[in-house]
Image 1 (tube, rainbow, N blue to C red):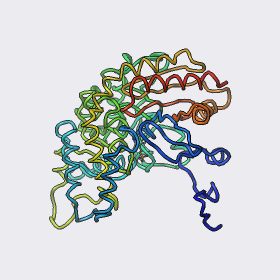
Image 2 (cartoon, rainbow, N blue to C red):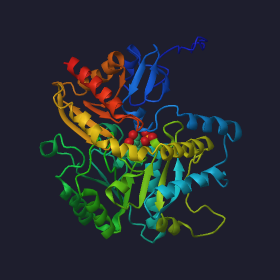
Image 3 (tube, rainbow, N blue to C red):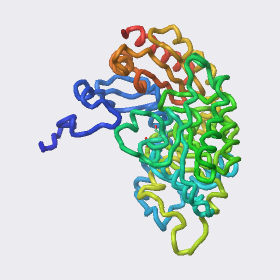
Image 4 (tube, protein in one colour):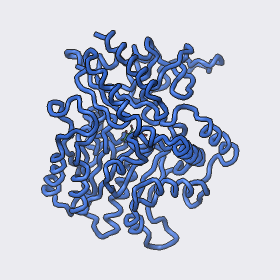
Length: 444
Ligand SMILES: Cc1ncc(COP(=O)(O)O)c(C=O)c1O
């Protein structure tokens, strides 16, 4: 081990094993970010970089909003930590109530965690324990969906459907089936918003339930719009049909709204956009504007009530995290909700949806583009992969966008996901699209 240097630069770029990163390529040509403000990052060499994906879909109100910064700073000096088990702090209760007010009717209780992965695993554990509390303990199977992303815990990985995230990790959870993805390029390429085709794919749920018998199935989990896989909006009517089938069979419906909650689709929750009432909603990211890690699960009243029994001196649910409802996270979330309300950011996202879609669809003739899928203020753009080199073109877009066009964009394989902060104006969005066009036109 070398001694710590005092000039603020790291000794070795390999000491930090970076997540979901091509570590060796990064070490050869690092992309360092040292500051952020509004729509932009500041790179280490002092450039202003447009944040086209709101960090990782979390900085919905823009970076370093002064109200959120001040709230975190104040709380850091007042209550750095409070034990999460058997003790509470008042603002955690205030936050839960505010979230319940924003949520669809009937989702009245909130269990807090720190990451989206934890929220998903928490929701899955609530589903299992709920059925057991109801005398239905054999309902242990889960149903996810191909191309779904539900984080990296063993629960979320198991119901997730991105092959690369699963293949190295053995057996995962037993008893999991997957619905087919709703994406079909031939049928829906370049459609704006929810595709007209594919509602009937929800009937796969009926088929899987018939195979195992409903009495064995705990829950079905989907992202209302699949985010990390490249922004796949649900076909019109699909989620409503899925919800009806699940309800008919007593199978709980879990919405993973880690990306879609807090304005990305023009509403507090996507459940509202689609008029669907899930039993549980996992959320994270936009809750604190990314400023402090925090996540949670909104829980239907009937589920919460099923737990509230047994000896009063014992926990009703043997689950929780040291950092559940951490005071800094709670304060960041409360301030973030203030900003969303004061700036009317959910409504603003809805107003800008059509203009955003136009700007994205304007890239249709750009080189290599084989599909564009805007919905709300998010959009997947698929590029043709280079022969025999999946991901190479996408990677080059990400690197050149950052280095040459002062643009940060999230790339998975050869798919770009654009999801600007909700404070972006239509001019900002056109600027973003223009930069992207120039990058695409430069790339072979
Ligand atoms: C839908 C969804 N669920 C879960 C997660 C996992 O969240 P985290 O990375 O905070 O664990 C993500 C992260 O992108 C996500 O998009």
